[in-house]
Image (cartoon, rainbow, N blue to C red; front, side):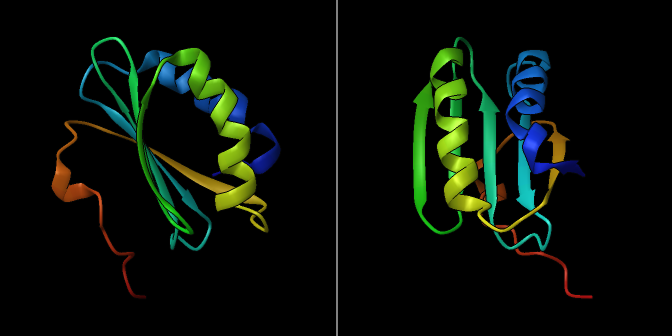
Length: 101
């Protein structure tokens, strides 16, 4: 878990280290909203699944620009954010529900 103030810098660092097909699963502390950042050949695919549903392709400069907007919309009251580095993205992993405790 990371502090929300560091979200943009940490995501940019982790995004550069991703190989093609890997993705970052970015979730709120309660795990009820998520943003998936998938590494494509020359770009990134951003899948937002929270307050709004969004699926866009963008380059690294576009990623840096949109992260601040996503932080404000998807995680407005969260102080800590969960980031998971995952392998081999497929479409079935888009609508995962959080585990009931």
